[in-house]
Length: 314
Image 1 (cartoon, rainbow, N blue to C red):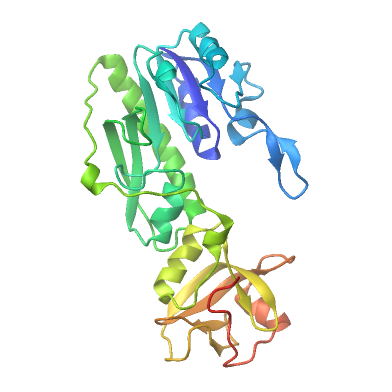
Image 2: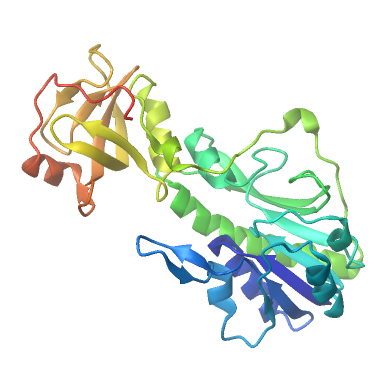
């Protein structure tokens, strides 16, 4: 089949590699986001997929809006049998959805209809889920609401962060996409409407989502530390220190003190009282400094017992 691949984020790269490795199909074009300023220097740089495919000799399109008449005409000229979409970042309108005779297939990093939206991996971890997975579906005009083709379940391990889970789901997505395309080729595809009553949502992550609220239960804060690692990271204000990003933590027994109270300032890292139980800060990054263990942090930043962190850092 002649396939157009649409993707931007790193999650999409293993799926693209799998398509390129299959001699039964031909990737006739890649559509991705335009180059944009990145990092503190704001230097213009390509997105992950564009950088990944740059030296492959495949036509790459980077429209600001893929639904314009010019963009649709460029896609039509490639005469695709199928369009595959993975972490692309733009909605597709009817002119594109109706273009390939085999349809438009999306790989989504959740078990739809749970966690529709831009950040399914982060929110699944942050909400304390114990399993997630990947779904292939036919794209329709509504966000992540198309008919399901296949799903693959992946456990969320207690030590997982959004980063570690992302890497496993990227490979799961590539495996599931290969199965889905084989079924398309054989004419054995089955499609199942989603159950709207079971739908949940995963909105785009904002930096403010990482702000820690010590009034919450320690387990909930801990899951958010995992879910927002590597970005945006959870952060709070520690007394006499300032803003600190928390990258790794552990739930321990609390002592009934006020939320945000420093219970211990020795050992593996600070122990902070939460709304229920307490949180041991095992890996941190003070503002403008390198990542360090909680123990190393305490050697350079002694805290006073019973001093209080902000209940919610501003």
